[in-house]
Amino acid sequence: MEFWEHLNALAAKIRQQRGSISTEEATKNAFVMPFIKNVMGYDVFDPQEVVPEFVCDVGTKKGEKIDYAILKDGQIQILIECKKIGEPLNVNHASQLFRYFHVTTARISVLTNGQVYKFFTDLDAPNKMDEKPFLELDLLDIDEHTIPELNKLTKSTFDVESIISAAGELKYIGQIKREISAQMNSPGDEFLRFFISRVYDGTITAKVREQFLPLLTKAIAQYTSDLINDRLKSAITGLNVNPPSPSVTATPPTTPSPTTDAPAVNCGDEQRIVTTEEEMEGYFIVKSIVRTVVSASRINHRDTQSYFGILLDDNNRKPVCRLHFNRSQKYIGILDKDKRETRYPIGSLDEIYTLSDALIDATKRSAALTNEQNERGETA
Image (cartoon, rainbow, N blue to C red; front, top):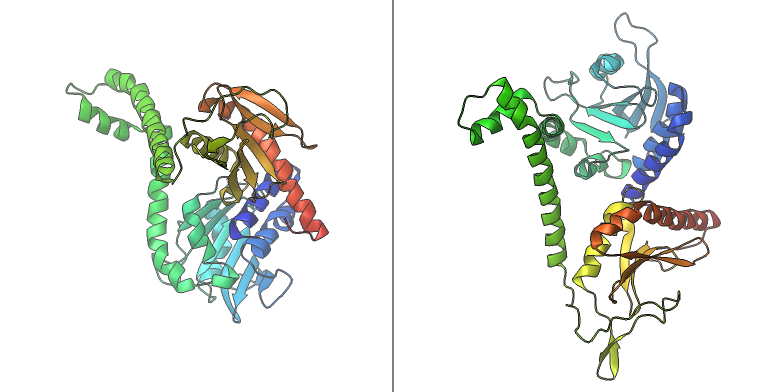
């Protein structure tokens, strides 16, 4: 499995099992050990790689233990302290990490509750763990920008110097992004006054601030929506797709069979497949919906003369849906577990979002097929 797939598999496990986890030890067994093994690539059963309950006496503190120490080439590289799933993580929970950090060779320490991982180093003072993390990972809300840096911590690519050199930038970018997010969700007084002063010439009174707060919130929402739409349009425009052929005729569906209800595009004595911009836009919408349950890299498409297919792992046996767009009435076709197709009429591409649950269920069925094949030792 690829790095992304391991992360998504663990995220799915957390969603399914977090409600039944009630202790720190259960959190470690269910979530933290799989993270160390599957995501980071270390053998949790090899004491030369992973030492559980690591003891390092400090001053008068005797017999205290850190949950895990990760070694590479015989040297301690990473210390991990665990809390129960759902428990908030703050600097007060990291007292043992602070004590152990400066007496070991570790340059990286991690505070986690199995879902959220906070990574620390010693940017502010040598051999003294910083109070703020340089990297944060929430497995239920993965920031794709953190993945390249997280990958540097894995066994196969561990590069502590590269990690430390990038840590300063990561730390402040992360803090700025969190502050931007906080202000966009709930604008503070200074943030609000800044924008009012740019568009309003009068005195900024409490009443003016009260009037502008909903306007600022609405403006932020609209601006964010515009950014997303612009990126989607740019992605579609950048693809090398053929324009729709005027010789395509629109025929309403007459039978559930996808192989008989769509005309082919005639080009002399030959037939060719035409991928339209609308089909690609539909593909991106579907991909944005189902990437919440599988890695986006696993979603592929294949165009045929009858329909535009969206697949998991580029495998015809693992359909997500079919776009029947080469007709006046457009349909989204979703196959059930017995491969029977149900077609949902849509009037616009936006209506695809109303089928989110059905699309996610179809994707999960196809992903389950992958798991069954892996258990039987088959290839997809």
